Amino acid sequence: MTARLIVFISSSGTNLQAIIDAIAAKQLAAEIVLVVSNRKAAYGLVRAQTAGISTLYFPLKSYLEDGRGREAYERDLAAKIKLYRPKLIVLAGWMHVLSAIFLEQFPNQVINLHPALPGAFPGTEAIRRTFESYQRGEVQHGGCMVHYTVPEVDAGRVIVQAVVPIKPDDTLEMFETRLHAAEHQLIVEAVRKVLSAI
Image (tube, rainbow, N blue to C red; front, side, top):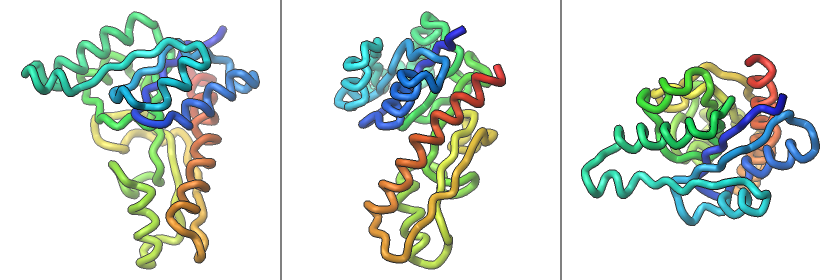
């Protein structure tokens, strides 16, 4: 049976595209039933629409401005998501930390891609921080991982991970390109692995 996926994005959606392509190539027995973004200008929404996938733009800003707050935002977001009956929710460049209010409604169904190895560089700007740390001689390589999402930032149980080398003559852009290529493979591998275990 085809598994129902929902993908959360905040920007260009290249990892979303990797999942779309893997499904089209019959490498994943899944269907993306919804793409969610908290940013209206996220190009990933265009990618979804081009592929004929439903989209939901759902920003936090209005909830903060009118005093409803983050908790109400997450409750309302969860209510909308439940209507689509997802087997798995994939955070692929989603720049908003989800709390237990959301996550407890989808136990072991939310996974997150992070462009650093377990325990290294949690939070934002992980690629730049990894590269700068390499330049200071503090790390020998970078990497990426997909993990189960918990309220603590980038701290859930790891599903898959990959080491990404940094070469002595790399620029940040060169390392970033290599890391994104690794992410595109890893996100598909992670989705396949989790779905096979459900």
